[in-house]
Length: 369
Ligand SMILES: Nc1ncnc2c1ncn2[C@@H]1O[C@H](COP(=O)(O)OP(=O)(O)O)[C@@H](O)[C@H]1O
Ligand SMILES: [Mg+2]
Image (tube, rainbow, N blue to C red; front, top):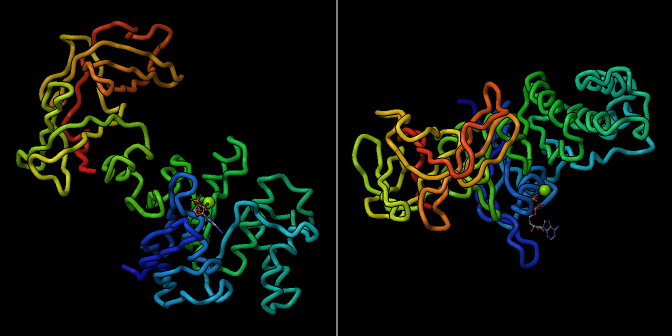
């Protein structure tokens, strides 16, 4: 495997009494689309700024292409940042905004101009070079900011919430365009976002951050299917968490005694699980089948079975969310998502109906923290 473009080891940063980043280590591979995902204030921007050299870490090291660049200023690093606010020069045309960095580092006027035009074409703004920033839409200004960051052909582009200023339809379109742009230019993109859908749909791998630390780094499907802990499970998507006591039963399977529900459940692998320890079984709402009593599947598909009463039905267009009471405690409800295939004018379950919930063992992850 090729060496990582960026490697950060043990990064720490404190602002006064705020520990913004504590012990963050990560590796960004050549050409990959990497996302830093987490709630507002968890330290994402600070990590990105330390990679760019805009902020000095209190501890830790930043390697770029294998070289220790920790003390080096931004212009010595072959990475470039795209700011949340775009930060275009208002008095310069799109072309001159893009050419600015080249001119500043001594590239001749004619060459800077032609490379700026080329890069504007790359972001689908061919012919827009003469426009001033206030003659461009929000989406177009953002493309100019992208072109400006790409024009010097950096090894990696660092993007801080690049889509957050755009309205919803444009944001959706720009997701596809950013993915395509990365494929075209072939360099690593590091995307900072608080939007899980953005990270899941765009990234090859994502690091989920909370409270200045990384909780898990993995491809999106793994974050969703096999979250490392309750925080990741809940941040990446809706999830049912059933508390209980774990017990190893061999061949990669675990049993969970859930005293609140008076049942024994089964889930998939859990590193660090010891018999007798407190665990949570995490099950996504769409992995649970809801049927009428007597109609439930049998065999492996019904390795887990809970019976209860429909307490709430929430219509969401393409799907409906059912809240089923399966036990008396406040935590004794399970959420089930069911696609509204066919006509949904009549919902198959209404409040008060008896229902049986079933799901296979591998649909649930056993979590120890
Ligand atoms: N320059 C600064 N001075 C003081 N506190 C800061 C500064 N930059 C960030 N912080 C604080 O550090 C924490 C992490 O901030 P930030 O990295 O911007 O988070 P995110 O990008 O995930 O929203 C927050 O509590 C924020 O208020
Ligand atoms: Mg931020």
